[in-house]
Length: 243
Image (tube, rainbow, N blue to C red; front, side, top):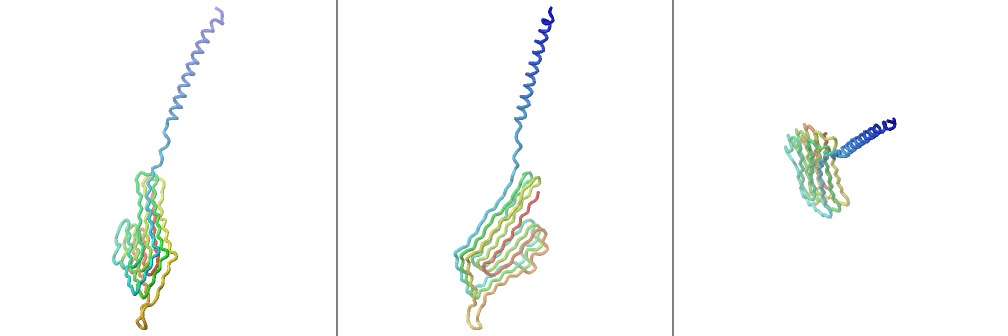
């Protein structure tokens, strides 16, 4: 047999083996490619979001106080609380008060948010005070609390008081935040304070605001406000985040 004739079967065998190897390689590539392409994308982060939106408006009002007496007081109140305690005491006419609390808490959320958006507006109001008296007082109040405690007292006309508490907390969370956005507006208002009566019998406008033994021995965050008169504004905002 000629040598060329003897090599032909060997060439055919090698060619067949190479074809089989090529097919096997293509199968592995397809398997790897298909397996890699089938992987699911990373899961989106879990988010907990708590929001409180609030607004108050007082406009175009007219008030005449003629020897009017307004008394706003709290005695032995908002004491020895744990957690969140909030109180507003007001007397008079056209006052605005608001409490907003947003708490977001989760054991497993990736992101936790707590937000408060609040607006108070007082505009275009007319107030006449003729010999009237406004008394505002806190006595033995807002003491020995643990956590967050807020107290506001106002006496008079057209006063605004806002209290907002936002808390965001997650045991396993990676990020988040807490925010209190408070806006108070007082514009184009007119107030007239005048005496009334004649001679020795005249009465003056008197505004008294006092704090007595209040806002003591608290742990955490505490805020106390006492105001008397017309058009006062008080805003107490607390934001806490824990991760």
